[in-house]
Image 1 (tube, rainbow, N blue to C red):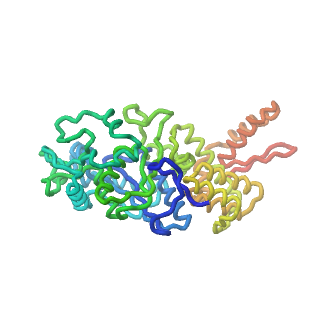
Image 2 (cartoon, rainbow, N blue to C red; image 1 turned 120 degrees about the vertical axis):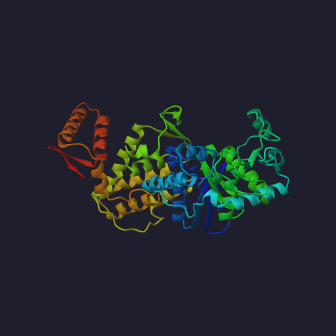
Amino acid sequence: MSLRIYNTLSRALEPFSPIEPGHVRMYVCGMTVYDLCHLGHARAMVAFDVVQRWLKSSGYRVTYVRNVTDIDDKIIRRSLDNGETIRSLTDRMVDALHQDADALGIERPTHEPRATDYVPQMLSLIGTLEQKGLAYRAGNGDVNYAVRKFPGYGKLSGKSLDELRAGERVAVLDGKEDPLDFVLWKSAKPTEPAEAKWDSAYGPGRPGWHIECSAMSCEMLGESFDIHGGGADLQFPHHENEIAQSEGATGKPLASVWMHNGFVRVDNEKMSKSLGNFFTIREILAQYDPETVRFFIIRAHYRSPLNYSDAHLDDARGALKRLYTALHSVKPAAVEIDWLNSYAARFKAAMDEDFGTPEAIAVLFELATEVNKTGSAQVAGLLRALGGCLGLLQDDPEKFLKAGSSLDEAAIRALIEQRVTAKQAKNFAEADRIRNDLLSLGIVLKDSPTGTTWEAAQ
């Protein structure tokens, strides 16, 4: 089966075929670097890291661009509050982003353009839009996009202009001819620092957020490319506005496929600073090891909501330990994946169906069970190799298990006794739960007519 991807634009699963045979060009909207990355950023970065890994595993050459927004209202405010330059702030935050991404096993994109390096390209694109009658100069010095002059506006979000007008906020003295119009070039304000201003035919100012991605994606990948990705919160207005800008300027489709990862929720509530349930990647990594966090994100489908809780992270840790326990019991052989192998074929079928990581991970657990049954180094090698397609199971098993096991011998024996009691009461579900809990900690139980013994994978 060939790869199929859910396209937000068509709202359907579509067979994937790159514009240039054998080469996939993918653009993903990156972070606005005024603060540390949070769990929502981690979800997006991991999701598209898995996408590019699987494309490579499928034999494609991948050019992956993930931008950095390093000029923005929030960045300017934060730099002024901190009493530091914009460049100092954004450099620090980019370094922090890389540290967090590296910890989570996220491969660096092929290119990571910073918006401030592409202002000339943005001005050129704005000029083209103005020439085509899609942009106009406002009385306050801004340059705005005339949304109603682009016939396809709303096709990504699935909203008509009338629906969008119904939910609009009233624009007061912002120089817009229509409240739906959005800014392409922001006129400089006297209170803004000099490093936030660029000279242009429109006067000193800086680019709007949306034009940044249109200009950078075109410069790095061409006027049309294969995949454009980002979080579901970017579908409207950011990605809708990118389409209006880019396709309004070129007359060509911006991207063949639009992909959006799902929202993050915390204990079934939307993550937000106002609710006090907002977590940075670093706060989470202070409590859980990076691979557990990555596994937790990957075992949910990228389009599904991701519900964060300590209980779910604890469960992810236990599940990951079961996989590492299998790899600890048998030294994996170095294998090259044979995609005709039944396990590998099922793994591939899952990933080829819109990057179905939950089903792919289920295959990993089947392989772990087979390793425990047969002690096969080849099967263990396949488990490790398939895990590598997801950026998992590449650590030393003994190191991983030792780092997470916190039970002493007395606690282990107490759990074994609880299991014996459960079996005597014919509560086999509870007995199995205790066995699996111990297994997740790298502790293997062995039943015999004379009793139960255990071996610690430490």
